[in-house]
Image 1: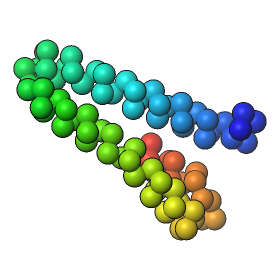
Image 2 (image 1 turned 90 degrees about the vertical axis):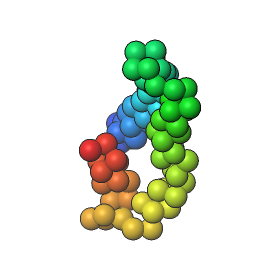
Image 3 (image 1 turned 135 degrees about the vertical axis):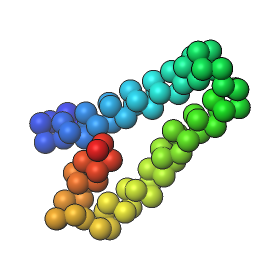
Image 4 (image 1 turned 180 degrees about the horizontal axis):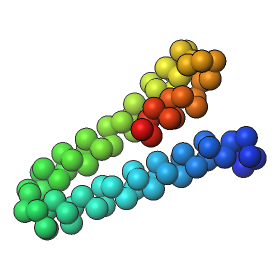
Length: 82
């Protein structure tokens, strides 16, 4: 898992964890405190960000079933980060 072959997967999970943990916690001060939005709008925004994490298993099956150029995960990671 920590070899150089899997460094991209480890870096991707680190980045996803950082963004999924940091984005919702930054939304409240930006939207509600500074922007004047309602707390229900803030909750809806958090849900919109986290909905893609719920489909993680589906995207895993998709990448395993339909490889792009013979690669199962690398093209999907590049598509996801772009």
